Length: 122
Image (tube, rainbow, N blue to C red; front, side, top):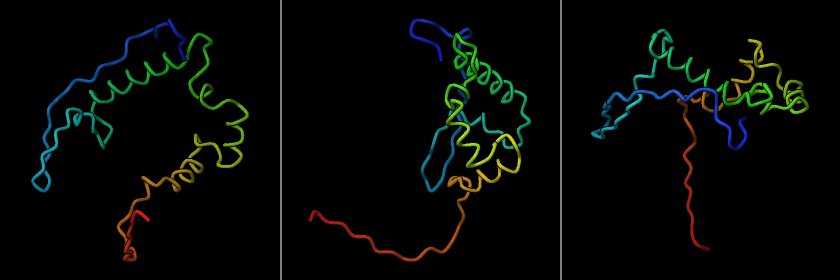
């Protein structure tokens, strides 16, 4: 990471704002960055912006020593322990193994038992 007093080699990209209104159950939500949603990952404008963000992140995280951000956040001993336990996420088989433990990716509609929870001061 950059030390105090030094600036990144490039300015951060600024995403444009495009007003997008979504209504659900009578409630209107405004998302100025909805244009960044690209489920097919094929919109050239979105991909261009994401490449700019990645380049900026790499420039900020590289610091003066030239180390990558992954080396900054996962020093060798800690990363080695993670690789031993979970496998290398850059390989497809381990990526999906790790993803199977992700609570965000494993949300499903299920029948859960009815539970009554009460609380009090005492």
